[in-house]
Length: 339
Image (cartoon, rainbow, N blue to C red; front, side):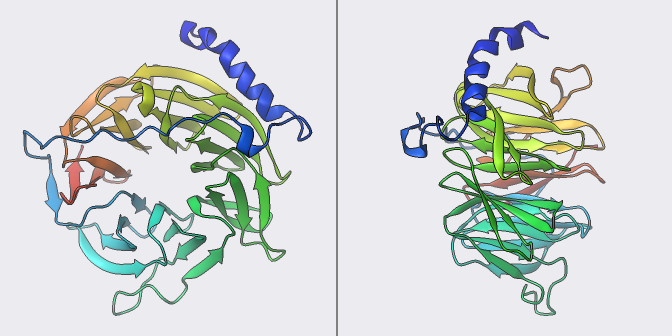
């Protein structure tokens, strides 16, 4: 146990106790204390050219890489634009959603999942000859605004959707949707096998979810303003605490803090390269992306690149090591050859 971890035990235990308490004593959603969610820093104009190549694209804040189909998806306005990546970015399809998407993630066997309005949308791996995504597209309607989605594969459930009112909705089973009462806001859902955790930006917390049992489990406070998070193939969770300029690492099962590392420059987006074993984090205050090795148990900086302005989204191709960075101000999508 590290000294940093030990010093935080008392506060974490309080949060965990609340999460584990029975429904009869757990405060209602409306009465739980919340914070104003942390925001990305407003990036200055870049002083150096971005590394790699930049493909023109509209302002957006959402990237996902599909390793099965070797496609990159980007949120731009009310659309998700899909690019082929080998030989440079080339638009191959676009899909218009009923509301502005809040997240796009790769689906388990190819294609993408999208959170948009009160819907969770499944985009298939293949597209029509005209570039439209119609055949095989599937939409799940949810009662509240969907902020996050994640692929899941157990008990016929194929998609988990997290909502603005804190519910986790299990979708795809013939028996119909299953709703789990979660935190104040289900801001991000992360899945590793049967292990599921949900990030709540309004409470700056991370909580385990027992999907088969239909309940949440242990919860931990995450600094002063968690914003984004990623999970690696080993079940390690990397949470960005933008509110306090730090990255906090956890194990998903059991949910336990593993490291806390200061990160300058208003950290925001995070992803993990499973081949190079690097955690990538963007710095919106300085227009940079930094790669950390984690072999020692603590982040150790290995790489640093200048980015497009306002790098609010990233995605990594673990096969080639190419890192994609999206500008939230219309500066395009950047491709960095990191190897």
